[in-house]
Amino acid sequence: MSRIPSDRKCVEFLIDAGCKKRVVIHCATVRAVADEMTAHIPEADKDLVTAGALLHDIGRSVDHSILHAYYGAQIAERLSLPRSLIDIILKHTGAGLDEQDVEEMGLPQADYMPRTLEEKIVAHADNLVSDNRVVTHEHSVSKLVAKGAFRGADRVEMLHMELSDLYGEDLDVIPERIGEYPELKIVGDYDLQ
Image 1 (cartoon, one colour):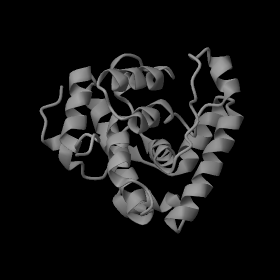
Image 2 (image 1 turned 135 degrees about the vertical axis):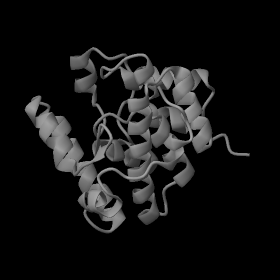
Image 3 (image 1 turned 180 degrees about the vertical axis):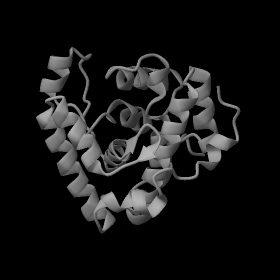
Image 4 (image 1 turned 135 degrees about the horizontal axis):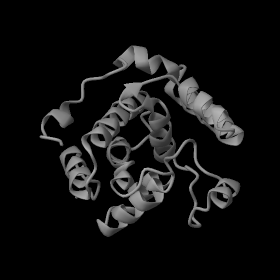
């Protein structure tokens, strides 16, 4: 029996943690992008990616700063979720945070760099979603550059190229392929506040 929670259980975890409707819709949108990626990258563990995409922002129930990834990983640990899923949540911001980022931002010491294929897919699917709108990677790159986060912008570019190669074409086709506002079936099953 898999310890990876079902779609329904993931949404229940988000709601039980106190995530607002906007966060749940964002997570479901990231899941739609991640599902499109895994449809063309068969070596990825689709169930793990789906759960990771749905739960990546569970820490926003506690905090909306960069610390939300750290808090989300703590919540996932308390839920006794698999380490692979906890790591997706911890490492999903941008294309990861290196040691210099961790020090500059005053984050708790941890490895915030996505290393597995599944961690990379969820991190980049999140880069391709702005609120609940599917966008190209340039949107995230431009936001990072505007903040002066040039190393982070470079990492997003590199991750985009790596995953585009695995996908078989530039991932910037995804907004056209699934729509800027894809249908989110799982969200409609819940009365979200």
